[in-house]
Image (cartoon, protein in one colour):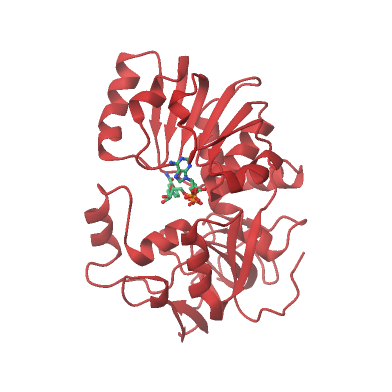
Length: 332
Ligand SMILES: NC(=O)c1ccc[n+]([C@@H]2O[C@H](COP(=O)([O-])OP(=O)(O)OC[C@H]3O[C@@H](n4cnc5c(N)ncnc54)[C@H](OP(=O)(O)O)[C@@H]3O)[C@@H](O)[C@H]2O)c1
């Protein structure tokens, strides 16, 4: 099978096409023909091994390969079609169109992918193409996890820092659907997009410091590494909740003290990405509460350009790589 691989850490140019053996499904596994995969910020971070948050550099490097990447095929989030299933699989059958997360094993930049039957996969939303569906699981799963942990009530004032990114753009939609009044922070080119997704107010971080606006919030979701922790906590109402998906070591340490010693709650979390959460996302898509936002699609042969697009930070929505032949039907 064709796959986009990398055999050393570095810039987008380390990505190239290669022929790899086609995997086979074990007893409790599902073999999926991948049709589209999101090129995510996390894929770029794994490829370059450059992280704004440094405390997990060493444990992560040990996990993914000290001298070179152990797993050569990136891609965590995808949509595709079930080709075959193991003898003991009961919930999927050949021909099913699915979408979801490949988890820590990655591999969605290859034409075929094997995942466990119990992996975070679900039937693809009926109203989406493969490319649109592949653009959802990263942002949707992570945003839903954070927004549920924030216990949002109708009328809550919610600030989303990094609102134009994959996770932030889904958080805007989910918070809006929960009845919150959403203030989005990102750079100006993303204002129109996040307002369309449900943001009521917008702050351009390149011209205005959010912490000096005098505004206060019930919930702050912060996806930006290196934000001013103390000042953001100071912007919370009594009983307010601050959630950080990209915490520095100092934030990890201070978060426990803030929760214990003040009337504010701090959550630093890595989303578990469960099957139940993906089912909830599918329902929200079919109820038109969540939309897929695809910035551009690229064929496998242009994976380098896809990663460059993610890293230039100019994208409006998800960058998606079409896996396999680009001229196949879109699969709505
Ligand atoms: N906790 C978890 O479970 C979890 C899971 C997945 C990913 N992550 C991490 O979370 C981060 C965000 O993920 P993502 O996929 O949503 O990334 P993303 O798509 O790159 O989104 C980040 C957004 O934040 C904006 N931004 C940058 N600096 C900002 C600032 N000072 N103030 C406000 N906005 C700013 C970026 O805009 P620009 O265009 O200006 O840069 C971009 O729109 C990644 O670093 C990723 O590794 C965490």
